[in-house]
Length: 65
Image (cartoon, rainbow, N blue to C red; front, side, top):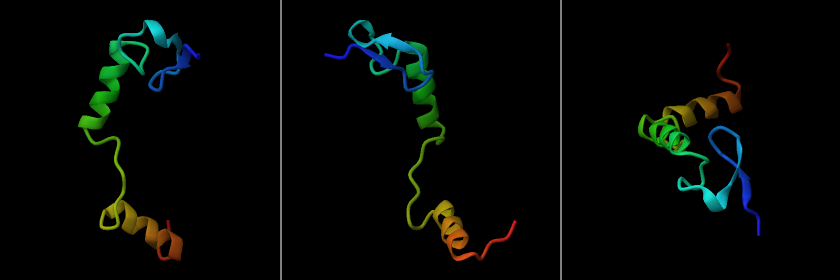
């Protein structure tokens, strides 16, 4: 069984079996990740989101920088 993994927040290798903040190495990394979710840093573009509209324009070559 694998017990050493890489923290998804900071990249540190840690023992999963002893971490109380799984899948993170520490409470600090866990809270940083939670804060990113809370402030909207993580998002999934939808068909009606501005990000997906921009992606559509880029694919069609309509936007120039």
